[in-house]
Every structure is written in structure tokens, then in C-alpha cells.
Length: 321
Ligand code: ADP
Ligand code: MG
Image: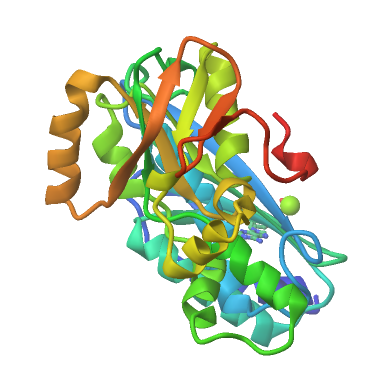
């Protein structure tokens, strides 16, 4: 029987990632056989990247391999879960082995960093589309749910926000790129899942979410699930110089509604704040207090000049919650 293109492709997947002891049977059979640890629950999440919608046509395959896994690991981080296994559904226009080798390099490098094993998937032909599912473990009573927020909780954000969407805006505008473009673009192409921070937040934060669709939209999900409102102090938002410059000009959309940040926003009881700041500093996990949860609805924005508004300063559809 002739060897099909997709048999060759499958070889890329089999040698892709490290071997875990809890994988009884990996790629190659009808199913993978996996052994979850007793007493913990599976945390499962899936994300799809479609060419032309989630990434620009012709994007670097190594970056795509990284990002396809990273955005999924970000969901595990936001739940406080330990990453373990992944599956990969790839729809490819053709059997481009150069593209595939690059994609699997990016995917496997990040998988190795978090001891994730690729245990199966599916390969089909069609317009380029990448779906990854990840599986992690978490103690059921320690999972960081969106619904856990309480009025009076302080709100924190990891890292910096707005860089990825500013990079995308620059890419779409084309023309001449400013010197800071490369570092912004790295944030768009190579998001780092905040797994280590998620680990620290287990048992310490009340609620958490990862910022994939913009801070206000995603914080809105926490508010809705917790039955609360929030106050964001815009002057405290952690932003790069480039995004800060936009904010000063009144262009708050990158910081507030940009998307593709993959930082964590989470709520912490006031009495826990000092301890949390301590462990995060020890672990070199930058976090910044940005506001609080309140017994109200909606999100109030406190501008640096003291003005308070529940109006959003821009009108993207995905911004509405
Ligand atoms: P079946 O026809 O039984 O579904 P396939 O031919 O689709 O099997 O896949 C054979 C094996 O290769 C399975 O173990 C499957 O999980 C794995 N596989 C196929 N595509 C991928 C992929 N994109 N990533 C990882 N594993 C894959
Ligand atoms: Mg199949």
C-alpha cells in the first residue's frame, strides 16, 4: 500500500513532544489512553485559529505552532490547572513539510517547557485551520472560577496589556515600523502562558480569567459570573511605553479592548493581598493592582484626571459584554 502524504505528516506528530508517565498509549492507535491522577479533576479547554481571522495569511509557522498551544495553556493558567496533555486538529491546504516542521518546532518547544505531551489529533485537507485541545489537572476546590469574585476584592493584572493589539494595528497599517515594533510584535506572536502565576493563585485568588478579548470584555465575564461590577483605575494599568503613549492621546482601545494579551486578571481578598504580592515578587511574577470588584453592575473607568465613566471610549462590537 502506498504511503500517503498524511502518513508522512503523522510522523511529525509522533516525535513532537516528550513522553509522560501518565500516557499509557499516545499517538498511533484509535484512541490515546491517559491516566489522570486520583483526587484531581481534568481541566479541558480548546481554541481554534483560522487563517485570515485569527492570524494573517503567510504567518511564520514556528510562531503559529507556539501560539496555537500558548492560547490554550493560557486557559489552563487562568483556571489554576497543571498542563498535561494536548490534542491537535490540523486542516492543511497541502502537505507542506517545511511549514509543518516549523509549526511542530514552535509547538514542541513550548510543550517541552510545560511538560505537555501531544497524545493525538486529526489531520484533514482544506483552508488552514488549527485547533488545539489541552488537558490539565486541578484540585476541584482550588480551580479559579470566574464566578468566585466577592465585593471588595482587589483586582490585579499580570504583565502588561495592549502590546499585541498595537502590533496588529501597525501590521495592518503597513508602512514604516517604529523601533519598538519588534518587541510589540513578539507579544503578538509569542504570548507566554501565565502557568506559573496560575499556580501561585490557586487557593489565593477568588476569581481569575485570561485576557484574550480585551481587559474590559474579559473582566466583564468575571463580573457577570460573580454578580458584581468593577472599578478600573486607568492610571494604574501596566502598559509599555508605546501603549502608554496611545493612552495619553486618549486611545484607550489597545489597553482596554485590544485582545491577544493572554495576561491574567484576578480578584483577591484585601487580607490576602500582601501575602500574594510577596509570593509573586519571590517568583518574579509581575502583577499590578488595577481596581476592585464592587457591589454594583458594569465596569466604571476612573481616568487619570479623576473623571469616572461607565461609557466605553470606543465602539468595538466584541467590547460589549
Ligand atoms: P483514525 O482514522 O483512527 O481516526 P487517524 O488516521 O486520523 O486515525 O490518526 C492516526 C493516529 O494519528 C491517531 O492516533 C491520531 O490521534 C494521530 N493523529 C492524526 N493527526 C494528528 C495530529 N494533527 N496531531 C497529533 N496526532 C494526530
Ligand atoms: Mg482520525
